[in-house]
Length: 66
Picture 1 (cartoon, rainbow, N blue to C red):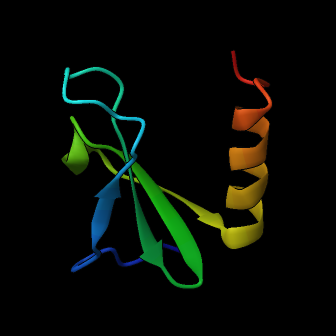
Picture 2 (tube, helix red, strand yellow):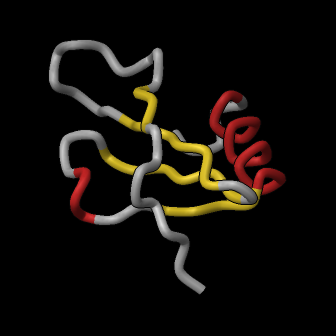
Picture 3 (cartoon, one colour):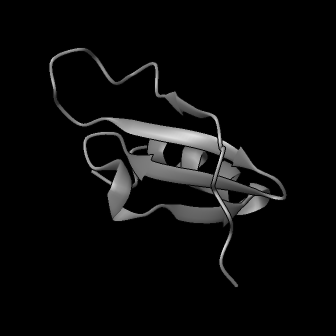
């Protein structure tokens, strides 16, 4: 099932600086959360359930991904 993100309000991560580095944006796509690369917004988005997104954020904060 595809989530319609037309009209979604995207917010850039507060950790994404203005230096052109790694930039992530998120949007509320109820009942999901959508994530995309702000440098390539037309390349699609990843949608996660709210529970999966919370686990992703926790794992990231815990250093699981690098």
